[in-house]
Image (cartoon, rainbow, N blue to C red; front, side, top):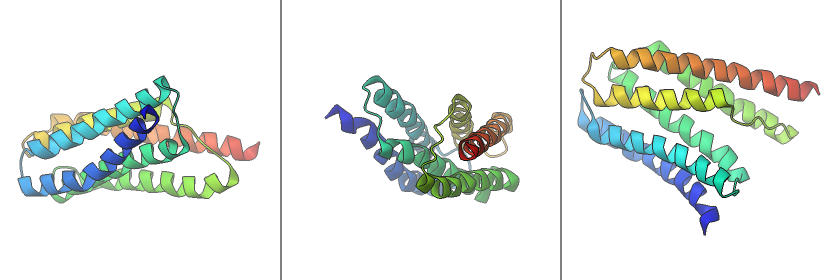
Length: 175
């Protein structure tokens, strides 16, 4: 039974993506507390599912693939919606979408060759900072600038983590 709990939390995070989008759109412009709670809940399940899987020694191939994909999907949907509402600058949404698309395509190309690149500490920190900052953008009024400072720090960390993943993949292929 406990073996399925981390993966179930990941599936819940996938299911939360459309619920988040609906809540965000329904809120209109300004602070979207319902969407913020859903987004924050997704962030908590991200931390909880990985922690439980490691603690209970029930890491799975599904979890290794689905967990980061659920994060990328939730963060990307939020970035696009926030950009559409004028709450995030378009370069921010483009950078995140490009990074996430590169990582997904890279995985699809490398996995059949047996190459795996585990999530790094920097990647985890970047995801935490992005979840935090996007949550703050969602629940603050339009025009509030301080969450964007945290957001740009998260983007910088995410790009650094992406470079780290690319370097690791290149070393693995070269071996």
